[in-house]
Structures are given as C-alpha cells and as structure tokens.
Length: 225
Image (cartoon, rainbow, N blue to C red):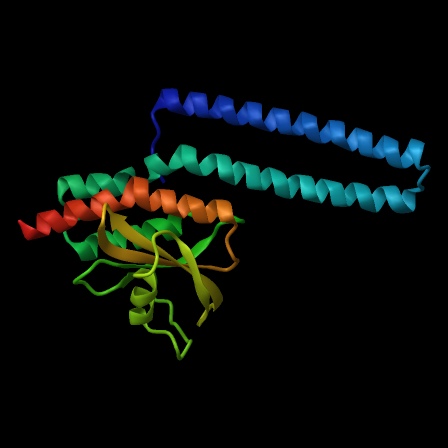
C-alpha cells in the first residue's frame, strides 16, 4: 500500500521480531506452569489437560493477533496516509469532494484487520454532499444523513451511533467529528461488523486530530481563495 524508508523498515522489523520473540517465550513459560499445575499438583487427567491446553493456545493466538494489530497501526499509519497528503500538495486532491472520497476509501483500505475492520465510511464536509466509500445501500428506514450531522454537533470525540442495517448485513456505526480548534469542519461516519474496543475508538480520535483536520482546512482555505 505504501513505501517506508529503508532505515525505518529495518528498525520496525527488529522491533516486531523482539516483540514476537518475547511473546513466544512468555507463552511457553506460562504453558509449562499451567501444565505442571494441572498434571503434577492437581493430578488432572488428559480429559482436562487437553481441552484446557487447546483453549489456552487459542487465547494465546488471539492475543498475539491483537498485539500485532495494535503495534502495526501506529508504525504504518503515517506512511499509508502519505499519498493523500501528497495528493493535496500536488493538487490532484483539490476539492472537498475529492478529499472526502480519498478519506473514505483510505479508511476502508487501511483499517482492515480482524479486530478493527472498517467496511463503510462516509465523509461530510460543510457545504458539500456526504461522500461514501462504496455503493453500500442503507436499508434502515429511519436512517438519514441529517441525523448523523445533528448527532455529531453534540460530540467532541468519536462516539457510537447505533446499529444500522445495510444490504450486506448489520454494521455498527461510529461518528468522528472533525474539529480544528473551535471550528467544526464536518464528520466521518464509519461502519464496522463488530463493536470496536475502546483502544480503537481512541485511535480514531487521534487519527482525526493528527492526520485529517489540518488537511481539511487546507482544502477549505484553498477553495476560498
């Protein structure tokens, strides 16, 4: 999806290798203690030890996957978002609609993990129609983009909206207000198959604050000129 400087790639690879090695050693150590406790101390038979061991390994794999996601996103987000910033700088992204489309597509493409999968994104910048990432049909009869805008006006950070039915199933919708200083510059609505953990909701807040709001301001100021 993006290119990373070679020196950064080497450091990132070393970091991930140490993290994997530390986790693997920890898992083996805990597994040995668990096996010793069940077999030697509690004198449990195979009918208990085997399912407990399998359950432990499943949990260990899930936790490892979560750790990989959490460590991957901060290290790679800047590089992945760089083409959007470059597009704004060079002029290929020059209107609010262009930026809305780029943001919506980026969020669905990058945030594509087992624990954090954004399947739908809608971006609305004041004075412009909302732009979505895909031709996803909202089947909820009570859904209205105006409802999203009204709800967002009461927010100062990412918040859960509600579960909405689409033509591909139910999605959990979250609203991310775009705020620059005291100026409200629109919102991002995202839909995910699962409710997001608090750490991922906070990451969406930081993504808007560190990457998005200033780019929206650039486009709006350029449009005024």
